[in-house]
Length: 184
Image (cartoon, rainbow, N blue to C red; front, side):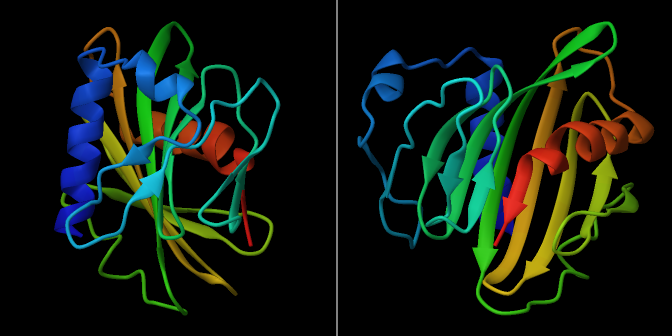
């Protein structure tokens, strides 16, 4: 879990700082340095509006919205940059998805200090989540499917720098993120 949080923090810093490396966007099969203890992945090609992204070895399909871009995908991890909206403000977001073989327990994973737990109905089963509000807000979520347990970490930052509350996090995750994800 600590490695996942480290990866999410690094990605969030790159997104906030405008770390927009054009060479990564144009190389459809550029190698990504291996994460600690992991194997190298490949960059997913940028999606055309409406074109589905097949990530995690095809176990997750994302129906991207304008401004969504796959940054990395392997059989165990995937990262997607998201452009999300809240009335009157733009949000920068990064979604990191990790798979765990088998039907793992999400109880410990979804415990977040100061977080508000909630559940989102989805095809194939519910997505359990915890919203942690703030200026650098996040939603930690998970779902168990036949091909594994999927753990999601959504990091959000408002361009205006103001805090994002738990109710807004829940609404954004429920209405904008979960409907775009199809787990197998």
